[in-house]
Length: 193
Image 1: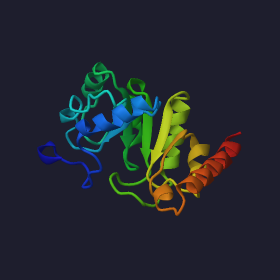
Image 2 (image 1 turned 90 degrees about the vertical axis):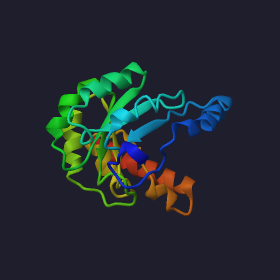
Image 3 (image 1 turned 135 degrees about the vertical axis):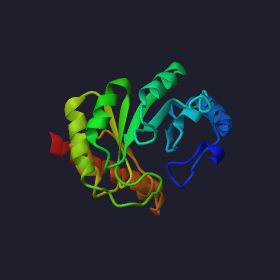
Image 4 (image 1 turned 180 degrees about the vertical axis):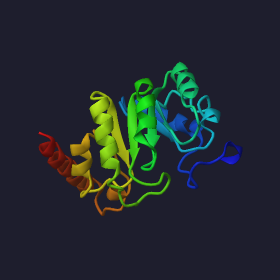
């Protein structure tokens, strides 16, 4: 990330121009895959225009990254992005709720941003419930700690998108892991009903 600064130590992907090949493959295959950029950086204002790429549909900003996200959200909306905000488990949920009318998604971080394979912080479930109660129609995703044991709790709390890494890619069979996660999520739906 160079001079842009870091919020987390790990870098998964930092060059939007590398999406050109992916975008052309998606267009060729008529895929409806939506690509989002989770901006785990300490200076997200330096990345909005840089990620203005036809292959990127959504930007997710971390509420901890800047003192006032609203001008940044307006700028990003001006580039045509769908918007999301993410929050660490210890961030007061009131800070998140005040910004939610300006975004399309809330992403609850189930642990410390930037490191896969972590254990899920169960305190996040209450934050998901509070957001779901305050905004019944907003999309809620969970990133970090998503696995067969935690998925039913997340879904029952109100999450409808699960960001899965280790639980799929550390499995001997990606297809089987996805199938088992879907089955586990349906248990959470039965709990809600």
